[in-house]
Length: 454
Length: 172
Image 1 (cartoon, rainbow over the protein chains, first blue to last red):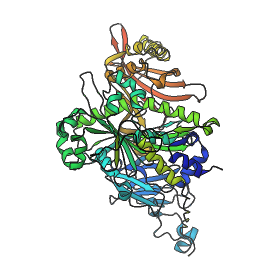
Image 2 (cartoon, chains in turn yellow, brown):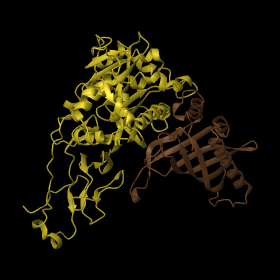
Image 3 (cartoon, rainbow over the protein chains, first blue to last red):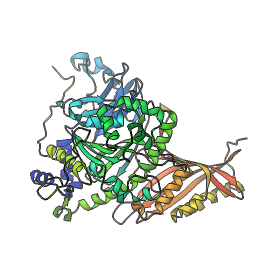
Image 4 (cartoon, rainbow over the protein chains, first blue to last red):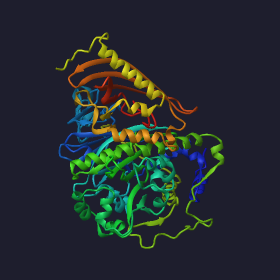
């Protein structure tokens, strides 16, 4: 039996017992104590634009139908028939007015209401034996949205999503609110990697230190001009609410519009971006030249914004990706990687931005390829007995008495706290939330029994 | 005019297409990527849609507007250049790959030969991990360029919705 308190106390001082990246007991704790209550991203409303549209997504092994009902409302329903427990939807996307269980033909409307129960009178004696009225597929215990991003929590008492996002919403908006039209998602690409899910989440939360070396090849071939160490370490590392992320530092002395032009936004998009973001949000780029790059919203949604060169003429175009590290086991993760773009962007920009994404991220992306190689290798090493004798040093940016090597950036425009230079602040911020969950006993949830004798 | 019937196996055009695919597979398995690029037309489009699980009546089985690959010559050259650097970690040490190409059918069209093939890619890395298999169908357009055939378009129809390989640092 694992000593959770001992593991957590090591993690809290920035020393990570290496086995947490490959330990089935830790994975069980994450299932029971973290994914049982945290807000988890499932889908974006642009994936289900019309009534009847649906996608099927999971929280670990729990499958949910995310559907837009006939009234246009987004519903998230546990994909299990109330009768014998069969999946009522076995496709991953489509359009349907009803979901019919293949087993005994119980049928549900796309808002979850039970609409058809064959031989109700003969089999159950009607409402007396099974109260059909008002029955519906189990809704997700908590569901909420932020700018079209659909989240669920398995905790019926989860705080409102906006409260959970807190100060991180300021940064999230750079990715999902470039104009009043919001973003639209394409994908996801889905693939399985033999890596622990935490490694990617931590990496995006603040690992600017890996960029110059892991991604040296993409600089050498002229695909991306920024990751050179001197540019990367001048970026900001911020921690805010449940999120943390990295920025680059763009050349100084430029105004807001030229910063956006520098990373490849066309003039047609800049007025809407100027209006969509607050003075404070613009100040992050304008006064300081901090351009957002990678981020992670705890626990397992990461975001990235990069600006590679997409042709021989030297055209630079930015792209946004949302990605989820969906845990399969202690040693395996399903990656879901979406391309995201301002829904109001010109068609030509959407095409170019998607090309930029495909060259950099996703299963074929030239950044992502080398990231995953590292993460698989770490996981390989974390499963043995020697990993139980090694605490990995995650104290970068801290002195021996736990103080920051350099003080936080004094006049940082964004909320939360931010540092300049290399340091594992974001990873520790993420791991601190992970620790909070792991040391809390799970709440027991009552089972619902439906249609039973009253 | 287009001809929907596959060419007989004895047709020299079919035999040339077959040989093209086998020679291409040999280059890929030998990691001769510059040699592979020489087989491609300058205006190549290299596509690999994301397959999805949909109901039989849905009328589609790929993500609209998203691929695993959607490449032009610039993008493919960059990938090949990257693999030639000393810092493409994911392929150093390199994968051991074998491209098995079979079920080849050739159709004669006005703009070239349309060639369908089945591909099984075996990929092994390191000494502790299980090997990966990727099964796909391919639809190619081969164009005559001088006395050689060149690949003008490839669409790779992968047979899984969730790929079981850590990345696509390899070509199919």
